[in-house]
Amino acid sequence: MDFPIVDLLDDEMSIVWLQTHFHPQGLKCPPCHAGVEQAREFRRTKTSGLVVYRCRTCHGVYNLYSDTVFEGCHLRPSQVVLFVRGVCKGEPTATMARELNVCRQTALGLRRRLQANSETLQPTTPLSDTRTETDEMFQNAGEKR
Image (cartoon, rainbow, N blue to C red):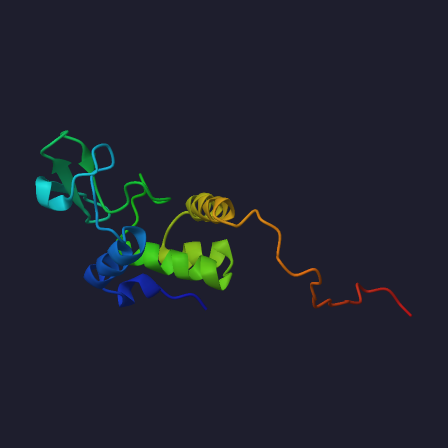
C-alpha cells in the first residue's frame, strides 16, 4: 500500500535540513561565492516553492538546489528529503516515485545521479589491513539436490 507521505512533511523544516546538509558553510552564489546576505530575493519558484536569489555582485541566479545533484529539479524540499531517505534505505525507485508523486524516469535519473556522486566520493586507497573478512551467503537457485 502506497500513500502520499509528502503531505505529512513540512517544507520549511525540509529547507532547514537541506541547507544544513547540502550547504554546510552556508548558501552561496556559485559563480562568485558571495553569501545570501549579498543577494536579494529574486522570485519564488512555482512548482518547488524555493526562493531564487540574485547576487548583487555578479548578478547570478541561484537557489537551494544550486551546485547539488538536484540542480534544475522541480521537486519540493519535502520530496527531496524523502527521496534521499528512500535511496539511503534502498527502497525501490518505482515505490518512491509513486509515494512522492513523480515520474518513475525522473526518480530513476535522480537516483543514478546520487549514486554516481557517491561513487566519486569513495576512497581510492586500499585498506590498511592485510586480511579482510567477508560474509558470504549461498542461496539455492532452484536446483534439486
